[in-house]
Length: 127
Image (cartoon, rainbow, N blue to C red; front, side, top):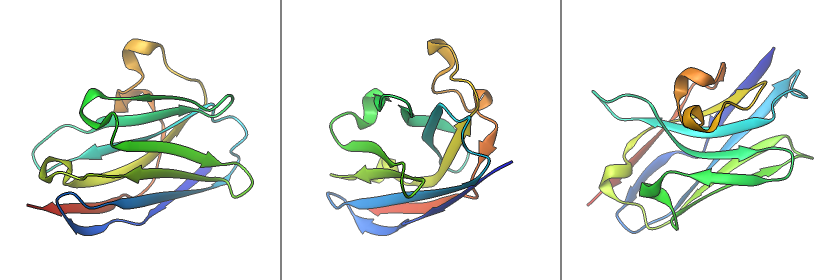
């Protein structure tokens, strides 16, 4: 079983930055894909950044490209999301996720393809 615990959320003004962390524990050897998802009130959970843990290959949705950076520290078993130039539309609950087999590309950002989830951390951006 994999446990994921997020931290680092908070309130920030537009244009500011936050760094989210996700500490992984448990049987985590089989987690070739990890990612950050977000869910705003009344909206579906959406993937924003994915990392292939072997090779550090990353993917981003268009709305965060150039502003968000996903990274990992294998020694600390921690996943990060550096968020810069935050916008009000980035306001959401952010979740860390992992899966034992990377989904096919059409499903890479689908929350349905991931089976391990953290409890979430709130990010609020005021304009």
